[in-house]
Image (cartoon, rainbow, N blue to C red; front, top):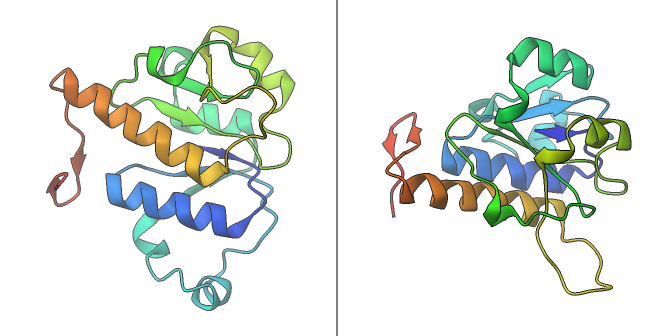
Length: 161
């Protein structure tokens, strides 16, 4: 889930990751770009209709519509003290990322402190690109599930190598 994404190229790359892994994309508005048919065609996002992302007006609407429980959500933040690989990710979990310039709002993070995780980086370095972080997190989730014998199923079958 992307909370108020700002950079269309990142969202496009994240959409590709979702399609490649059979993952669902949820987006919390506002977005800083258009996703109408003309804008998608101009950006070369011909796969967007297959992605079929769900857009929500607010975080609370997202919670209500999805019915997701707190124990099924992982919030990604540079403020986390728990590395991603120590978070037990299961099929159906939602990985939640904030906007490129500010991350997730503090009021959301403070509601779920035990569900905050991050990707460790060298001290003093800037955050990873959002699309890179999402891709890393999705594939770590797939790795964990595969190691437990829990497989994600793509619309056409299992993931291929």
